[in-house]
Image (cartoon, rainbow, N blue to C red; front, side, top):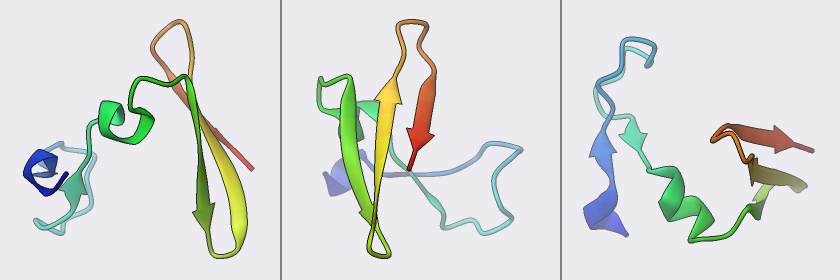
Length: 57
C-alpha cells in the first residue's frame, strides 16, 4: 500500500507538503462501504452511485 501513497498537491490541501493522498480505491478495495475506527468511534465511509463519498458516524 505504501507505493500507492502520493504527496498531496491540491490547492485545497493543508500547507504541509507531506500530507499523503490515498486513492479511495485503496480504502474501499472494491466495496461500496468500509468502516473506519477513529479515537474509539466507528465511522462508515460510503461511495454513492454518483461517485461521491459520504462519511457518517
